[in-house]
Image 1 (spheres, rainbow, N blue to C red):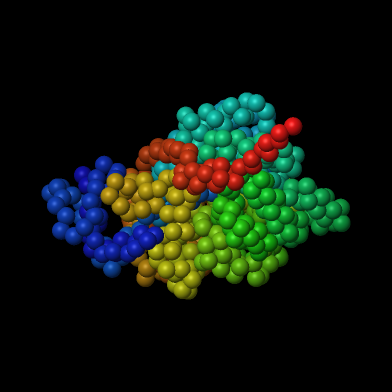
Image 2: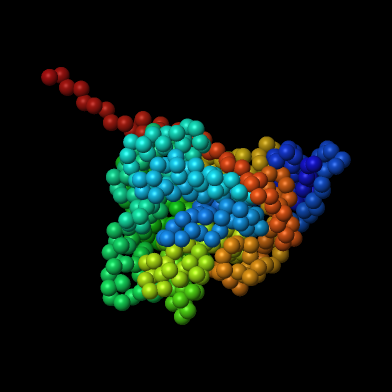
Length: 481
Ligand SMILES: [Zn+2]
C-alpha cells in the first residue's frame, strides 16, 4: 500500500514547493497536485507542515567498543532514536583495532548493524598500515561500496594514525577515488598534556578540555589539509570544533582546495563551562573529543556553517552511561569519550538555525541531509524529495514545541546534553523506506528493516580533482645532452 502526503510544503535544498508526494515500494513515485493514486492509498494530511528529506547523520558510533567498554546505544536503539528525531540514515564507522584485519572488522560491524531499523552505511577507519590494508581498501571500495576512510590523528597508543599511515592511506584513497576523512587533533600533544595535568594533580573532568586545547586541533587540521594538498585529493574533516580549524579550512578553500568540514550540534550549542559542573557525573557526561570549547567558538562555527566553510552537521553519537563514565573517576583521561544527540540534532538546529534567522528552511535541509548525500555520493537517492529517490521523509511541524530530556528521549543513555531545552519545530511523522515509522511521539519500527547502502567511488568531486592533478602535473625537462 502506498502513502500520499497531501498539501504539505516540500522543502528541498534548492527550492520549496507546495505539492503532494506519493510513495510506493520504498521510493517516491510521484510529486504534483491531483496525482492519480490507487484507491487503497493511505492519505497523510500535511497541510501547514513541511515535507523534507530525512536527516542523514554522517557521524555515529553505535555499539562502539572503546576505552574498555562498549557504547550503550546499539544499531537497533540508535537508529530508532534517529527516526524519532527525523533522521532516516546514518553513516557509522568501522574501527579496526591496530593489526586487526580490516575485512574482519568490517564483517563484524556489518553483523552488528544488521539490527538497524533505518538505512545505514559505513566509513572505515585506517588505524594501521601494511600491504593487506592496501588490498582491503581496494576490496571495500570496489566490492562493498565504501567510499570514505577515516583517520584518527588522536588517541595515541590506541587507534591513532601516524603521518606515515596518513600518507599511505591518502595515496591509496586517490587511486580508488575514495574520500579521506580525519579526526583532527595532535595526539602527541594531547598525550603530553594529559600526563602533565595528571602529574600536577588535575584528575577531574575539568582537565579534559585543558588537555586538548583548540590549537591542538588547528595544527592537525593544517597538517591533514597539507598532506591532502600534496597528494592531490579532497579531504573531509569530521567534528570541526574551533576557530583554528575553521580558519585552516577557509584558507584551503580560498586557495581552491576541495576541503569539507562537518560540525556537531553539540559544538554549535555548548561551551566548556559544562566541565565546571560540581558533580562528577554531569561533567564526565560531557567528556568527548574534541571537547566543548570556550565561549566564542560556537558563533564562529555557526558563521562557518552559514557561510559555507562547513557543509555538514552530525552528532558523533556515542553513548556511555553514568556507570561507564565512572571508569575515569580518578583519572579524566580514562573517562570514555562520547555524547549523544542523534534524536535531537534536527530539532536543535532548526531552533537555533531557522528560528534565529541563521538558516533558511532550504539551507537547513542542505546542512542536515543533502550536503552529506552529495559529498558521500548518496545523492539523489538520499537527501532529496524527487521522483525516484528513496522515500525517507520527515513531516515537520515548525510550530510544535518539544522539551528535550533524558527522561523522555528514545536514546539509550541516561543523560542528555540538551536537557531541559524547549525547542520550537519538531518532527510530526517520520517515513523510512516508504513506511510510517514515527507518528505522534510513537515509534513503529522493525528490527533489521534498515538496509546497508552502498556508496560507489568516483563522485564528480574526484573527477574534478583528477583533472586538476593532470592539468597541473609536472613535465620532465628534455635535455639534449
Ligand atoms: Zn567520532
